[in-house]
Image (cartoon, rainbow, N blue to C red; front, side, top):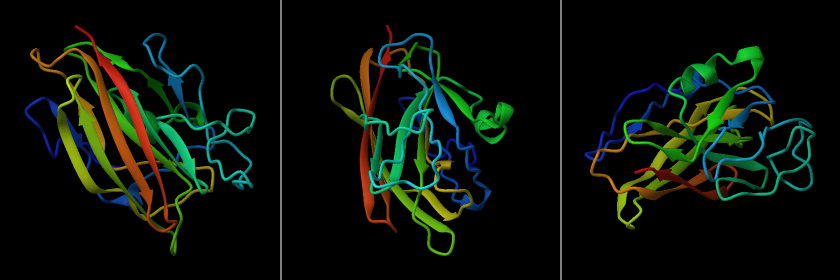
Length: 219
């Protein structure tokens, strides 16, 4: 799994945490891995979404399925392309790494939230599924952008390695990507809606998805 390290700390208290490239240590989530919706917060998902069987992607080429194995329509922050899937989610779980690496009852579960108070942290995670492999090696890249409520871009990173190197797991497995954004607002940061965009590209498959998610920084 990716190491937690504030590798690119920025003045406005956004840190790019986890630029480690040791993909060999990454763990695939169980086939029923899901993100739990937070009990409150505008924009939070209303139901868990998981990558469940069947093992084959199927003719619809949709990676995301519900608990009954039915295709889930694309959302701004969760999309499929040619069998490849990616999900940009925000979680308040400071222990997200432990939840992912040591899931309770074999199911990796994260709370999802779309608002944060000053003095609290919100973590942006990118999950990817069914990357194309070349001799069991994946090559998934991504570009990230974070915009303040006033439209100012405060973070822009391109050509990051999301998932690169040897991976294990089946077609329905989920993988945690390397870039992890930890957001903690300073007192002078503007309240309102912050927007994150992530372009996630499976280089071996020639597929990409543009993801967009938002959170509200409360007064």
